[in-house]
Image (cartoon, rainbow over all chains, first blue to last red; front, side):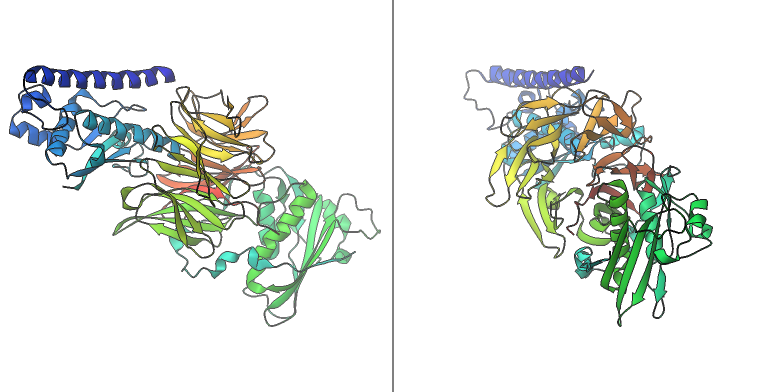
Length: 172
Length: 445
């Protein structure tokens, strides 16, 4: 059961990496014959997101900064991926920008073990940003575990709101 | 055979030097929540008083009764049941006390010897063995000279320690203290405060306050410092606060996790958790040389290090096998063994001084987070609490009691339970939440 979940986590990370490399690969294909550099410019939105994206859509993705996770899980959901890409694009475009990625958990279990779980969530988001080309120096990761709940309740709905990673802009 | 002791009480209550106002919100009070009906019957007779008014001084016998009851090993009879009140052995009519069914009794008296100086003397007696008419040699006779009136409570705890150790053969914890973190919601947001109090919640004093979360207080072996985790400026760090002066020193702030400090028994090294090299792993930090040594390797999260009593190994939580379980690493050889096999979640380990029992935050198939005691050589598990959101169990320095945090009516409160599970105590705050209790080591005599 436990191993199963870990495996799922690992599988998800692998999938994320594969997906990201696939996207980067597509970008590479599209650029073949031209000079290209990963982590430099972001290209057009087709190249960056793998799909045509309107400015309005991009603003919507950027407005989102909180990503939720399942119990004991640290895999980013597919629907959150584009929002994280949008933040990546912004960070690459503005290299002086600094962010903090916070990891949080629900209130169940050991405070210190939850610090470890929260960091996995924050790192999952940070890794996606870095795979898209954001410089490591632009990101700091902090896990609050269960110490900063978004919802103060003690039930399933509060727990769902509290299992999250948050992108916070420190220097814009 | 009278032994004369002059006890320097000031070391027991060194915190009185700290000039901070008592903040009512963080004060705890003890109440017996369950059990306590078994135990050795004992009569602690109200102490006599000579030379002026007793007003304003602590009722020593009352404090001793509460202490002994709190241990779960004694059943003190109420003073209302006592029709006689001898203050020395010579005044004791044994048949009467035998008829009350007590095994032992404590008698004592206080004499005012100066403007604010007292002599306090007590005797511990065996009621059962007493044959009528034969004067008894007390099990214990102790006299304390030059005691100040406002030290009576500390003195009473010391008397409890002496009685407990004489009758049980194990050192008492009544002069120890606890540290915990109080959480208050104010107009400027949440404030968290490390508080230090007597083991029974009395004399609480704020020690360190932050607008960021505070976590994992850990006492130094000499009881003079507390290591803790904070998040100032949104970065996690490990800090050490001096319990007397309140001075704070930062000892670790690496990228990522800086958490779960634990003092080695010799007081020279902190075990801690860092994730600067990837997954959270156990490290040791030599406090004099600042040398950092990595202790655990591999995949998975390792956290919550706690030292064995001889300092030769570290017990910790790890999810290297999937779910969090408790492991032990032998320092030097690096050999790792798994200690817990029952339950799908074991965390926050703490080991008794005799290394026979392990206390953990434990989740069984039913999903409840309870406090459990594991017997290490048999692997058997005893559940000590039965509510759903317990956390942070920590053993008393004599290994006989566990303090922990529980959720009660939507508030975090502290509770304590004896290792045999027979007696439960609640230590709720008057307001706000309290979390992360940590029992001090024994105070030097």
